Amino acid sequence: MKFTEDHEWLRVEDDVVVIGITDHAAKELGDIVFVELPPVETQLAKGDEAVVIESVKAASDILAPVDGEVVEVNAALADKPGLVNADPQGAGWMFKVKVDDPSVVDAFMDEDEYLESIA
Amino acid sequence: MDDHAPLRPLPLRPLHLELGARLVPFAGWEMPVHYPAGVMAEHLATRARACLFDVSHMGQVVLRPRGAMADLLAGLEALTPADLLSLPPGRQRYALLTTGQGGIRDDLMVSHKDDHLLLVVNASNAEGDVAHLSDRLGGQVEPVAGRALLALQGPGAQAALAPLLPGAAAMRFMDALTLDWRGAAVWASRSGYTGEDGWELSLPADAARPFAEALLARGVEPAGLGARDSLRLEAGLPLHGQDIDVTTSPVEAGLSFAVGRARRESRPGFPGAARILRELRDGPARLRVGLRPEGRAPMRAGTALLADGPAGAVTSGGFGPSVGAPVAMGYLPPALAAAGTALWGEVRGKPLPVVVAPLPFVPHAYRRGTP
Image (tube, rainbow over all chains, first blue to last red; front, top):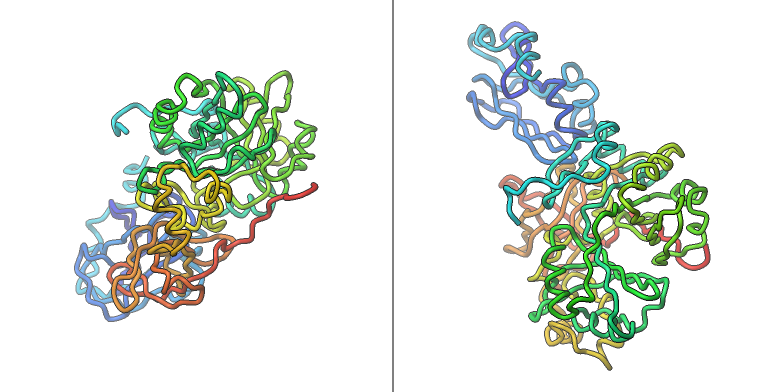
């Protein structure tokens, strides 16, 4: 699993990258009450607004960390946005994008580097 | 307010830190926004049990008469449409300070404490209010220093408080009394800003910590500004600076109950009377309404409300933990203000369905009448 400075995690499954937010981000956001996911087949460019997370405090944008096409979103979050708080790096995943070259994730931080960056 | 001025710490700051609070700047104060339980849990705990909120940032002001109390009450009536001459000793009343144009300068609580009045005003307006009051009432205005203000709210409030303050249980909603706790004078009122039963308790800063700890030891949970905001939103209570301000009139805001009957007839000399009395007679141009977004996306303050065209805006909105869905309030023209009216709220450029709903979203649980 890799991590971005924007507190997202990325996990490669063949030519698909699974994306969510980190434990740290979920804790910072507080109770999440709504997650607006991108439609499947959306073409995302790195830096595009991909997801809006509404917590009891505020709305936050999640930006696409890589270029790719959305191939699946976590439909369970529509009824259970709290999954992001309960298990942000597992059942609270957000969306999957198909990428041309999965090695694009190699440039991101590993877990130790990420944890150090937020310490 | 100077955004760069140092934040004022609450007297209970060390306790908040020990309890794991997240502190944020608010109205010039460093305030607990939530504790480790989080906003949602604190909100639900207040509705189900009892929570303690530190609201020491609120302005407390004593008005001490230089002559008769009746003259002081009449002097304050010159600044507000509230009927204060009928306020009995030991009672509290909600009041609005109005502008000459009929807007709302601030909303506040006025308690009749036998030989003086106690006002509790919004933190962000406290300085301005004191100056405004002093213009009219001069040296009778005494800002209170060195006191904390704690709000104990929820259905479990009485059971938690009665052992500490035996006189509290006999109080009714909007009673205001001075009680004794270990030699400290506690200015207690049975009121709050959550829609629940409860008390607001002003006490000397050095007594506040042991008092708060005594309540926490009885199972009361700490709650922060985040839960206070979602609780008051569900209770349909407006926040000054957000839902009401110098541009909104009491009639538009649905606060006509704060325009005393006597002030409409025999004693109408209050700032903005021309507009306010006209709106009471002819109706206002817009009304504060409750709003229920149909989806799960919250509609926050500033969200445009659309009917055939632009119709109004959301002034407060978020997720209502007790409602289990997003809730909001805002202003609409009277023709669109009836409960059930279907409109659109523009969220991130997309019109989403929203329906006008009655306020409050959660029924008030005040202890009126005999306890």
